[in-house]
Amino acid sequence: MNDNVVSLTPEKIHLAISEQIANGIPYIEALIDYATRNNLEIESVADVIKKSSILKEKIRSEAVKLKMVRKSDENMVDITTLCE
Image 1 (tube, helix red, strand yellow):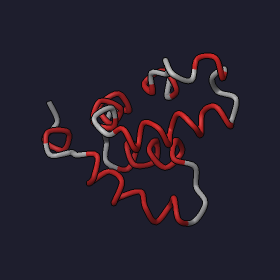
Image 2 (cartoon, rainbow, N blue to C red):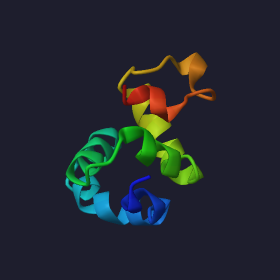
Image 3 (cartoon, rainbow, N blue to C red):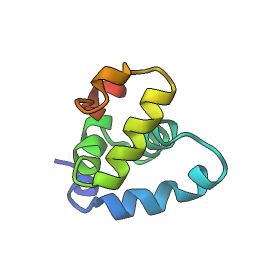
């Protein structure tokens, strides 16, 4: 397992992407960029994000708004499927 993944927390990820979010970059895009820049599998980042109800909700809301998932599925969204 990548040492970067072991030290990841939802708070560290949110802090790392906060400037992008403040500049209007969507959460999903910022997270993909974060994973790419840090040579991480998007699934590893998703596993960490799943621990944060706040980040999960922000991503779920964004996915519904962008019509990446149906509204009827909004309570069942698995964020790992959004990044495939």
